[in-house]
Length: 319
Image (cartoon, rainbow, N blue to C red; front, side, top):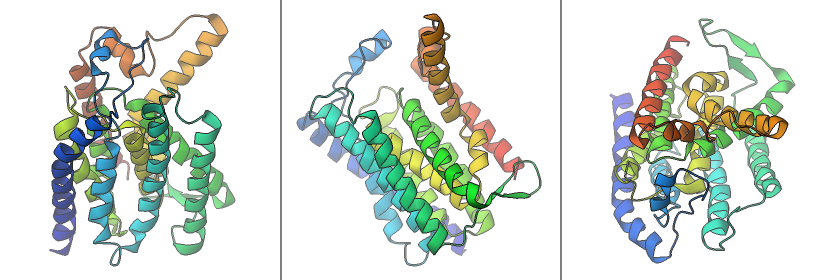
């Protein structure tokens, strides 16, 4: 009964907060002229999205944090996840603010963004090493629970996983409802694992599920609000830190395959173009390639979400 209460209540609370905040925040963001900047070299169909309120990630963050506050005392294991989520959310907010309010299209400079991400990762690693019993072992998929004791290598691996995942979610956020749909499935996967292993982090993963479901009401095509880097970086932090707390960072390759695919498509496109002057994809990240190949935006979101749902089931089988 306790588990039922712990699962259902945070989902409902976060969903309620998100659904209530959206119609309040969207007009407010419009009034402040926090509109989405659309690339001129992007798909032509996206030009109509210019001016749609962005920075909606604040709604997701508020929903997760306000819900999780009720559980911090009984579930202290959620503290590092909340810190990483908020930390990367703040980095994203600064990036959005510079882009939208200060009208500097590139936002934070690359070195500034990377430095801030390293700071968040460093604090997270320090907290894990000194105030938790997470340890330095990670579970290996499809080995019936076998673990790999990484020792000191765990900490540089942590930086790689967190920053890689965060940038993966950032690249994935390019279509109405795409990142929200994929991440709500990923968060559900981690919720199932957290409950089954009794690691005490299910309140924050449940809050993420509820917050994203509420946000999706306004973020599905045609989106009335975008999450911006505030939301995409925060969600990347949430996914990565949750996986690490559950000793499942290797599972991100499975359940977060779309994040990986988006990053790899950009890397391939850039490297191949520099070497040959030609492009592998019509446009990167890869969701734009499918758009320019004739897929409607809604079809890309649906297919990517279906793939993620199947991969989450495979992830459960891999435990």
